[in-house]
Length: 483
Image (cartoon, rainbow, N blue to C red; front, side, top):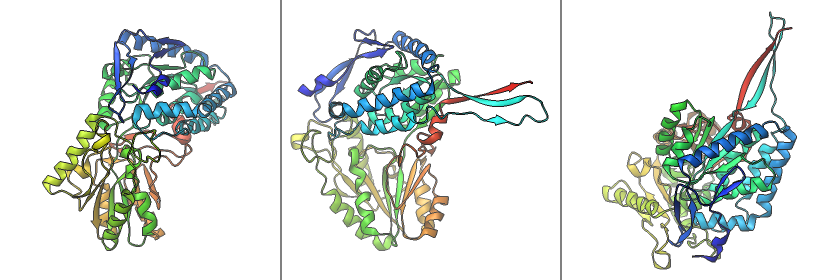
């Protein structure tokens, strides 16, 4: 076992208690870069999930009564701790996901915390003209209560910042259910919250599988759920929440198109279009379908191929590494099988990649950067969220065809377009079915914490980021005073 694993925390955190002898057994975790086990974690029982919700409700009663400036300052302290301990926290992220090491990984989460901490003392209601009645009518914003926070494995610390920060700033308490494939960051977040002086019970963590998640969302003490993850799991979660009519924020999958027109700065568009290998392709809003106008089709393919050839595959602590493994053996095999099926069916031509990385990396879950060309947009490879370092490239002849191809998917998280024609750009903004549209950019993800982020269609609903993200965790009470 890697000596660095001493930094990994393995407890449940319920209130201010660390629970190591939990009743739910043990959660085993494998380092995606080596295939070797990381320290196993305490797994919650249904009873301990209930205990966490009780602790959260108690913490909520304290936290919501803190003055807004006091909550603001506590969240700033939490952000400061993330930055101060960045070197150690970066190790945690690499050990649980296999991503290349960076001491700045948790700085993204800290940015979200600081943004929403700044909102904590600016949550206001409004007065209403009650004419013809003589009284005073106004609105009183209140935190929704206790929030269940489900984060994804492809960026666990960052997603905690995105989902937990607005809930905490609004005055809510949270119970985090970390992903089984990347469980350690959630525990670290809760530990840092206690160090920053947040009241016990405001941040709790329960580890486990689907039974733990179901017990959490069906608990009547949960007032809202925020989930980042796959669409299939999101559907099951929505069905479970229906039992108590618990509202959700769902940030789900994507199959985003990146459209390159012949009038674009093609050389400038090629480099970011090759970034589908970032985070080993594990990103819900990544532009994984590359639609290219026919006059520059071959030029773009050659350019993307050249950029991808520069990718350095390796383990997270190796020098110069730019791409690590995918999160699990199952994911790696699924990706390779999807590519193989597309090749055998004639739905795509494999320009490079398509297999597992062997040699010294054979024990890890590494997948070769893969470029598929002449792809049939209706084929499974072009419609399925692959969640790996794979891009599907296909030509188009007209603007109308490009929009139709881009929209021809069940997802609607993001869309990207590269063009110098600003009239065309505005037509694309109107025509593309997506929660976020980038022009002459390939993102991916939210531009900043101040930008609303979320999808339409089967990419979910609700928004993270901006004031809209804060309002997801605020309930509006109307007050009428008869004078």
